[in-house]
Image 1 (tube, rainbow, N blue to C red):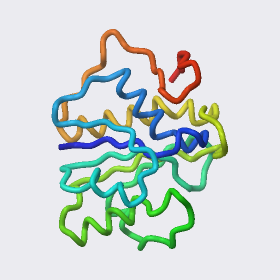
Image 2: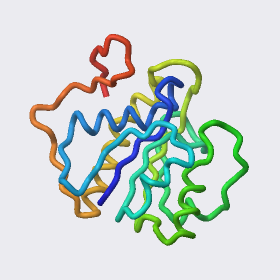
Image 3: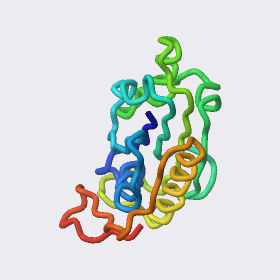
Length: 177
């Protein structure tokens, strides 16, 4: 099983990047039975069941990194485990590395992990992405599709393509992405 997980809080502007990418993927692509694509929100330690015993996991989230808002960063499992988890400082914690460390110790960690991260521009109250993060949705989705195909998963472009209509946008008007 390959899991694609969108992480983030859809009510905190750019922090909702992962869920936006998940909505984009579900509207634009069809996946084989071996792929699960899901918005997991901000699960904290509850992230471990989504990661455990998977052949591979692709996570989409915002990341703290040097660079311009909207720039993508790709991190593999070894890079995520390079540094021990940091002290928990927000409701978002514990994070991905905490969950991966716990699963590694239990011997149930995913075989492969890819984090597709975007540098946020603004994290504050709001249900929409900044223009920089909105522009990064399609490139992030393409990174996910590329990784799924590398892993041997079936991915087809949906015909006709559905509108991207996130459930959390008031009025659910069309969202370009």
